[in-house]
Image (cartoon, rainbow, N blue to C red; front, side, top):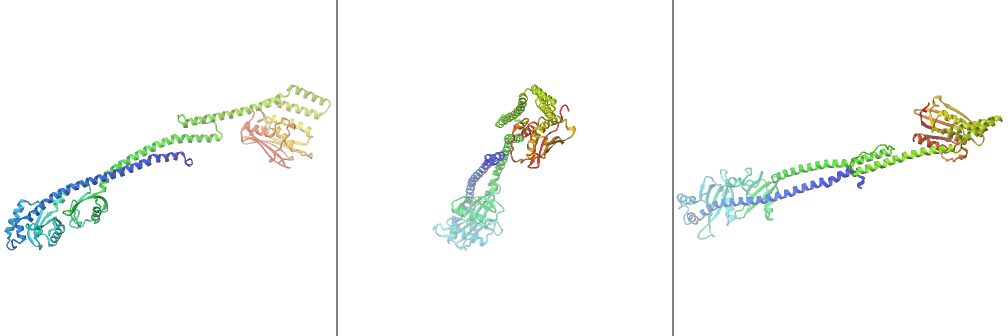
Length: 581
């Protein structure tokens, strides 16, 4: 399956699998782990911070609760509200005198108004510069009743729109704690919490501290934009806190005001308020984002470095392979002259050297084969030439020729003379190439001999330019083809045939045609011939092989024949003149 993919693509894929993907995975895992760790630690530290803030607020609130207690246990207030003195009998002077005694002992700085009410909700005493509407008074009294026996806290806005928190307590008779005789309220400015305590605590950019009542009413906030005295701008916050409170979770994540926030809270059951911190995840993740950005830069640098490394590694592997493939293509096309040039010391270089060695060996074998073929032809020619002593043969033929002259037998004289010249040319001439003129002269002697045998049953004609007579051709390539025309062309019925020899130059090639109008043959059928009837035993196949060995594959002997129509044999060879021409 993988072998269908290129090595280059496999290397890149392997690089991505073993380097880039694990780096990305580890980067994401580290980011997630670090983010969760930071979130948990911030959650814990935030809860510790609001715990300390809550203690500070309770400590500060005790001053105002102590003031409520001082009022509730004051003898004058006890006597006046329990019925010991009638309302008419209590003068303002006596009230002021009694209350001054309390206020000289304790009167915290953020007190806005102090008021005392009897059990009928009628005011007994008021001191302060702000007036409280009856609506808020009734709400404060209702909260005190609901939170009994603990003090009640109620958000109260004065008639002059001053934000306060009413710290209220029931006043019980000293002689009977089960008997309620009135209510004491200390109205504290919300600045005590928002400016003095909450604003001094910095939990991070965008963070908020909020004080809410048990019904979700906002008492105070470190953020001036938060509206006091009503529900928070996103009601889902208080709903989520109540749900998490039921699960005993003091910290959780949630979406508040369309942003992810980490919420931590403390619930003070005795006074019935929630101290809540909101920390946006944009702040939590800001440092994580910086770390993530640094990690991304580092990862990118690693990836870039890895890409550069894989590029050079890829070239060191794929480039030699491509060079070997290109060299193999050259070798398959027959070009054995080039070699692979690789001076490295790796396995690809060793393979290249082995291939070079193989090609050199192939080239050497081919050269040896050519030399062997040439040597074989020379040996065959020498064997033919040395079978009979040339001088003995020619002296014998010369004697026979003169006997023919003396006995006046011209046909025998001509035949012996032609045979003598033909043998002289083939045996004594060791040149592998001859001129066309010499080859045609040998061919004429051959035809003279064959005319004796076949009783002039063929006629020969020539068509050749004189300037082509000096061109060189391989020795003994025309005689076997002409012999083939005579043997296979003459029909059994004794009819004479015409043999035409035509030599022409086409571009840089010589086209030598030997055609006859004899009986012809089917070129698709193999015809075995008896070499005993031939002069040299060399057939047309040998002529074709000699031409190809001598000049190359594009050249050779091409035969076209049809039964009853004759035969045309065309030899195509390069054109070049002999050195003496």
